[in-house]
Length: 148
Image (cartoon, rainbow, N blue to C red):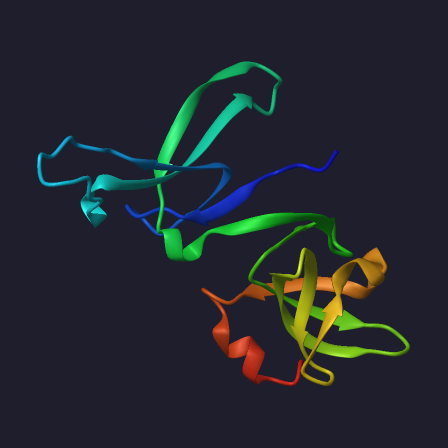
């Protein structure tokens, strides 16, 4: 079974956090109908479980920017880094070479971009052929380069 994890940037300091995504709406009963305002919405990443030393730790919640939410693909790159949605990856093998961003489309994870501006199923590549080099939020300029 794959890990279902998310990451996003914290609203207080812009640091990336990983964990479980929770979307919550505080509803108020209103005689004129039920409406949701932006201030009623809460997007958080929850971290719980165990520390590095396998000791229990408290559950922690971080308010996050919902525009930066990325889901974990369940895959790792050639350096052992997790590959997330919206990551920018470099692919190098005997048939393909290029840079693209990771997106979820039609029920599958794809790399959208070079070499032919097509969608490439990321699962078809071996671990040693994919390397995370950034993400679309912190490094958008990488998509404009040819990888050199």
